[in-house]
Length: 288
Image (cartoon, rainbow, N blue to C red; front, side, top):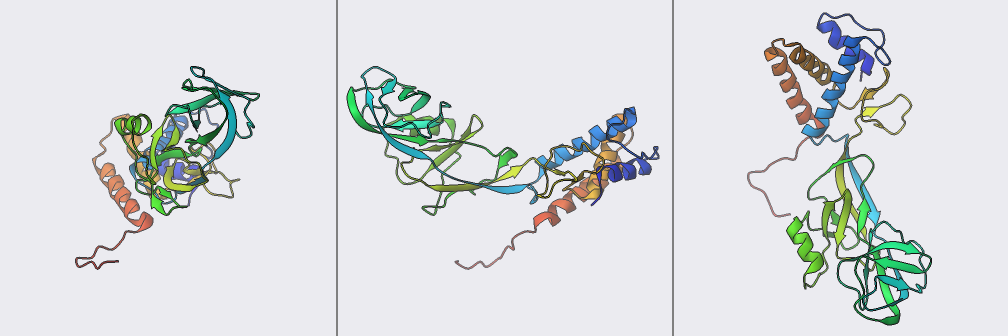
């Protein structure tokens, strides 16, 4: 696996250009452009295929708290909460309880008072309230999800989704029975679930990350989204990066790209095929 410097040395040498001794930090216009082009190749490659090196699992346990508090009809404040441990003022917790409207969120928490997104419909003292987190942040390197990998591992059921905008609002706002299955949707850079859960459930799904470059100091694999150092390496085959860089260079300069585009697309097809293998397909399958 070649470094960024070695890749550009090879690409520029094959194009009859001056072979650099260093690229990172150079002010030479050709080298600045070549670095931008090879990074552009990497950016595009991360999106054209579900590369096994970029595919990861995200797993987490749902969070909920049960506290008591006092509500007033027509007021968005819940006062005299028995506790506020774990509650946050980021509108990621949904609240349920007598006199609390459906689809009500905790907006702020101050002392023993919580402010809700909707006013209570009853006046009561010491009622039981469930504060359940329904919005979970995505991994820092998240790029896109892998469909049909979302499971409630506690109940051993596949989660249902991603639901549409219309389904989502119906689920959260209409008079329906929720049932045992979790629905999900990606919205506002959160992984959101419905209904709120009054128990700890272990959930998980696969996603494709955006870290395709590995620095010389990394001990855990890809840790960067761009080449920035001469010693950086990447997850993609050398020949694909070299051909991709040459293709972009030829295209920008207005040269004929017919032959090099054919070579690049051939190598891209091979890289996809060889990346993670494929399941066998039987013409006479048996029941599992």
